[in-house]
Image 1 (spheres, helix red, strand yellow):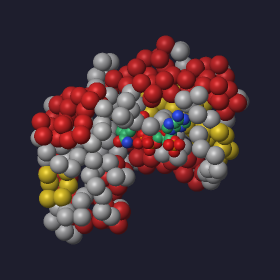
Image 2 (image 1 turned 60 degrees about the vertical axis):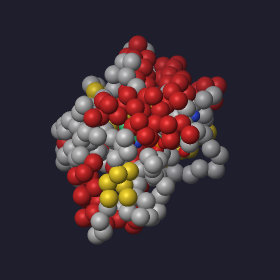
Image 3 (image 1 turned 90 degrees about the horizontal axis):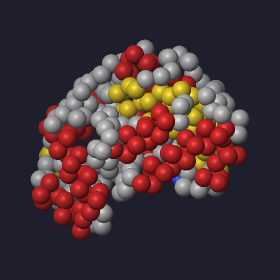
Length: 291
Ligand SMILES: NC(=O)c1ccc[n+]([C@@H]2O[C@H](COP(=O)([O-])OP(=O)(O)OC[C@H]3O[C@@H](n4cnc5c(N)ncnc54)[C@H](OP(=O)(O)O)[C@@H]3O)[C@@H](O)[C@H]2O)c1
């Protein structure tokens, strides 16, 4: 039996829908009562409370390890995923597919350092493991993290190209490995088919939405104190500034063939994603990065 963590989230939700569509049996660990997921045996468990995990892991042979991103702090996420790895080891799980992040490096700003710490614990635990490292997912554009204000302004503080990947391609890649269609093992940087500058992404948004979108790139000297004023922890904002520097230097710019290699299909393009999500993109949001 396969256990999914994070099945109510962006990437995990895409995988849960795919498994259900293919009638692959799976169990989903959720931390809130009353959740139903098509095709899933739903079990209650909270990765913040390791005592709740043994029952959920009973009879599991593969684990899909995926929780929230490390915002505003990385320690809880590292502890959650370490708890899941330890519960998997105790239950005799054979294989773990871990969702990590492109650019992961020991000592790097979160999310890079966060996922490096979890990957190290996974390696130390001696599991057969497959690590999938997605680039920024396209779905972030429609989930209130960034987005377009009612005035048509798109706030993007990151310079440097980003090879956004569709969360459904991350799910397709995980599905291929979990079902044996692709080989287990290794670490795979999952990207979309192209890396775009913020200006190129803004032009694609204008085309998809049929209205002129204005790119606003706030300087980090201006944005960082505003983020602190909005209540974001200073440690998070420090990591954010360090991360922005790495993105400017190309940390998220590489385009890989990993999605095609694992799934046999080319990754979805940002243009197709924007056209498909026109309605959600037009919904007004207050951008996280607004100045
Ligand atoms: N989004 C990106 O652009 C991106 C890019 C690269 C890598 N990643 C990595 O991919 C992973 C998933 O990202 P995502 O954007 O899909 O996350 P997400 O949409 O925020 O989903 C997080 C999932 O984790 C669950 N969860 C959180 N805390 C939990 C706990 N204590 N116990 C059990 N479940 C818990 C959430 O459950 P609830 O529904 O109960 O909250 C939700 O199902 C993260 O590690 C992130 O760093 C994301």
